Length: 387
Ligand SMILES: Cc1cc2nc3c(=O)[nH]c(=O)nc-3n(C[C@H](O)[C@H](O)[C@H](O)COP(=O)(O)OP(=O)(O)OC[C@H]3O[C@@H](n4cnc5c(N)ncnc54)[C@H](O)[C@@H]3O)c2cc1C
Image (cartoon, rainbow, N blue to C red; front, side):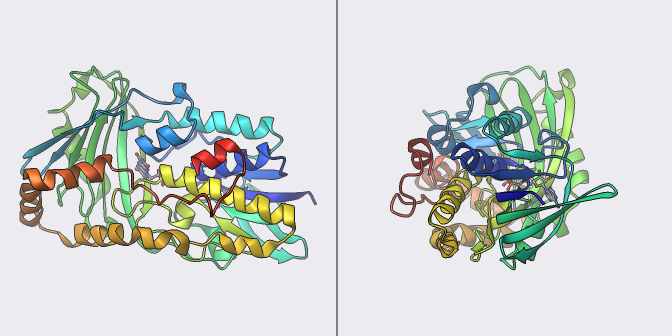
């Protein structure tokens, strides 16, 4: 049986980021996914916030034009326009980005196992035996550490006896190409409890792509029906008739805040599997990049010192206190069920004194807590800057 230092289950952004940092440092990594290619069935809109754009070397050709304008609409469609002097958002070309990162992993020696479904892992004297299935075939590999990067409903979390997500919203969106851009790239956000209970409906356009989507608590709406309804309204904001629908994307987003027990002596969790998503904005890409960098650092330290107890340093409680205000704001959003209540909240947000709060939610730099330098001293200069 082949032995690896680390087996990573899941080649989304979190798994890829962790794999490429480990492979670059010479760690023997196996990266596995149930998809044939990470570019298949992308489920995210892919909006990167300024903090990620500044702190991580995202390849320029994998990003759309910058978005500096946001319009927030109340249920009655009263608007609040927000503008930044900075490039606040860019829509990632996620399939291309995932493939770029996968190529880097493979070039640095990582083993890529596509089209295999994780089927479980058991502890053994070298760490764990990880089992995969592909059709009628099965395959086992041995690993010192297992990384669960398998998304919001992580089976690895369950098998390693770590914490699991329990609060979700769901999102679904259509992606269009060749829609003419009138004016500047813009992010339109709609607070509407009918279309998007507990979250937002959105249209984001960067001149090349338009994403039209809805998100909310699954038990309170039918996402597909809400999206069909919202697409009709979206045509008032962007001329979709000239464009071509190229994809439908969607999935669960954990919004309960980062989990507490995300590592033990057998492995750890990253990305959605660790609940590393802003409970307020439901943004998970910046947390993927940051937490996976810290995970790679922790694993390298544990491997180089042969001290598995160092894995205990990777602990959700380091970050959880910084999530408290966002968790409470999420509860408030979830509780504000009626259109009249949200309308009143939006009227308040339009007052100059409260406009800065809305500005802060969209343009602030609070997507994921900073991981202090003292927590993560030098791994490599690039990674440390990113952390
Ligand atoms: C509709 C939608 C829009 C979003 N938009 C944004 C946005 O614009 N900006 C933002 O910051 N965040 C956004 N998010 C959140 C963000 O996309 C996620 O937080 C992030 O993509 C999570 O990445 P991940 O690598 O942890 O998980 P995933 O991307 O879910 O990757 C998990 C991988 O594990 C694989 N896998 C799962 N189970 C198994 C198994 N048993 N065996 C083998 N492989 C397995 C899957 O195939 C997948 O490739 C959005 C989420 C949704 C659903």
